[in-house]
Length: 70
Image 1 (cartoon, rainbow, N blue to C red):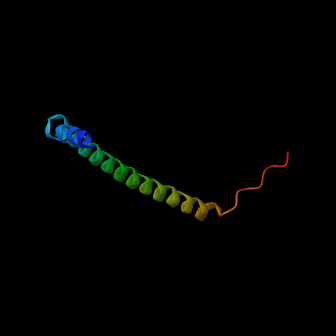
Image 2 (image 1 turned 180 degrees about the vertical axis):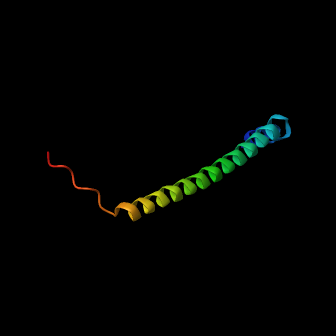
Image 3 (image 1 turned 90 degrees about the horizontal axis):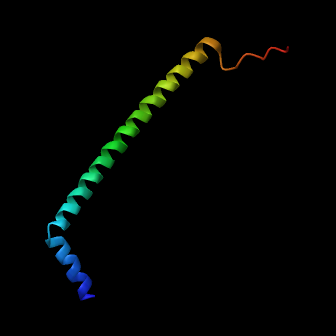
C-alpha cells in the first residue's frame, strides 16, 4: 500500500501530475461551456418551432386536409 501512495505522491509532485490536472480542469470547463451552448440553442430552436406551429394552426386550423380519394 505504501508503494501505491509513494507512486501517487511522486506523480503529483513531478511535472506530469499538475499538467494532467490542468488538462482535466480545462476539459471540464470546455464540456460545461459546450453543454450550456447546446442547451441554450436547443431551447431557442424549440421555441422557434413552436411559434411556427402556432402560426400554422392559426391560419389553417389544427386538422390536416382530408386526402383526395382518387
